[in-house]
Length: 263
Image 1 (tube, rainbow, N blue to C red):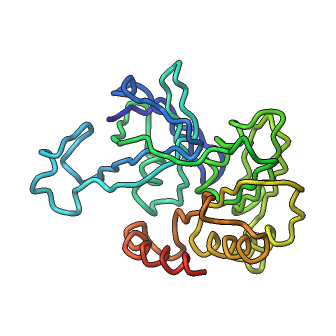
Image 2 (cartoon, rainbow, N blue to C red; image 1 turned 180 degrees about the vertical axis):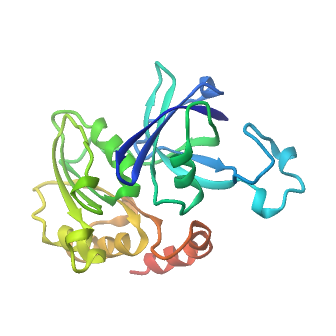
């Protein structure tokens, strides 16, 4: 499946929203999961292949020319207009996906599979806990939009600074706590310290915690040890790991998750 860039919107200094249309989006089924994602394939600039491509086009290609797979959360799927919004965290020329989003212009093509996804705020709890960084903003934003006016949410988001905060609309009573790395002496502790210090609302709640591996693991440990959360029934997972490329992270993620499961 593939689609074409409709437009690109700069949401913050490091966050870009790419809106896709056309291509084969008439076959896109959407998903009810608010952490729904696509598995995108980013073609290196030096590669001779173009989108759309098939398995036969990849035969004999050297590794440096092969598309790089990356998973991205669906921020919004407009089924009526067949427009798919994907948010990208971009840091200059670092990484294939972010640099592609920074170069993207109307008519550029992106190939992908999906969607997948598993989380949606539950209707049988009293409130919702959402914790993450820029990489989780797409899912957090989609989850907040899925809540109705009777719902309640407590949200912690870690970003670089005040100018990196974005609008997160919701009909629910949502308390959003923005945390800024730029003003912290220990930014890697910001998320877990904020969650640990929080007064949780009364009643039952579900949990969505996604972002940098070490920070997600620290929050997970706290929820197990101090909040009596059964994490087996919650959505808690690392999206990326500090000081690791995406390929490096893929190579060690299985071991990391096994170690985390023993916490």
